[in-house]
Length: 444
Length: 114
Image: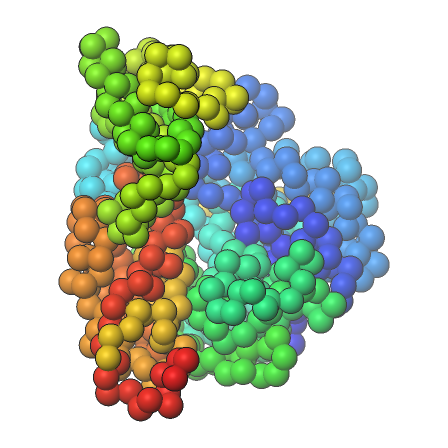
């Protein structure tokens, strides 16, 4: 049996979680997931500005902070912190934590190869719209192939303390230690599917240990010290989901079910680079306090393609707010919205979308929100987006004047003018997996 | 007898681009048949009204006593494009718990709060 923990569900997750995981009890592997779709484009821009950047900068100091556990207790770290510059990330780890051996997985970054792939005839059509990528070619900011567990397992095979990947799948971070330690092969489909589902359960950190859990949420113990998830994996593909006993939170069949359903598509077709997992085969069983046993998982063969995660510039946006208080708070906010829209029209500004929400009334649920005709206060929230930065910038000047020249009682403008942001949109496409060749480099 | 869905199920929701997924999970697996009958794709689409621009798909997970819904075109473009407060659809699952369902066939003792 090996213990695999997840200590980061995204870049920006709780900084203490991975430290607690290595301090509060035994684990063998620490998986850390840093990358969301848009993260890669931010990192690509950072690398363009400075060739030594382009990775998750939280990661090297974290490794330094837990380096005693890595050296003395043999905890091994698997992370997709490398972003678009995994070698620079590994060098920074070695600089901050001297003596550690870091294995880097390379080959996922196809940004420099896009024209080569186009020349080979791959249209890289968007998986949602079917549009060929040529439509946005000149606006692309990053392009990476999702890679699976086998390249990461190869990196673990070097004996490195730390494995740094770029755009590996989230689930591969947990599956790779199983492939490595149990010597699973590419045709061990049920086992690979089991490890993939184990990865899915822990990839969002505390979302499987009581975080964001609806079931009896008021009684979940010690959420301030919530434990992050640990999988106790067996060579036969069964596993137990748990957490350290000293940590807060709750692992239950209910909490695991909620996470299994999170961001799920067709449950019979959970497609990864390693296999296709069947979520309708999962068996869950209460195995004692904060322990859930998972078994029965079946899988199908991996697809002949790999998915590309591509980001591209897609215009500009800004979102601004004002607060109206009782009486007639909602009526005032609605009047202010009409005035802003009329002024924007009067200025001849063009936007792809103007979106208005009334925070406290319908911001989250729109037409599905329960009626609330006379709220004591309402935040008017107007967002615009469009291709022209100047138009979006001009919009940001149209809210605060309402404090003096609109309906009475506007406040809540203390943050000043809204910020104009570039929209970096996401494009996914498939290429034959033979096009993506990974390799491992060791840095120490 | 009509009760809110929250009497027999819990949910979790999230995003994949402009599609919101909602997992609906029966507290007791014996109530899965009620979910199957009462929580149809059509009723979910009607619950959210114009919030969902596209189709609603339903998938069945009898092994977990759960249904998975995909609400296409529900997130104002999704991801970084969306101007919405809840661009990830995190709150839509809880909203669905107010859906009225019929549990007349359930024995009184099995009803929550009975």
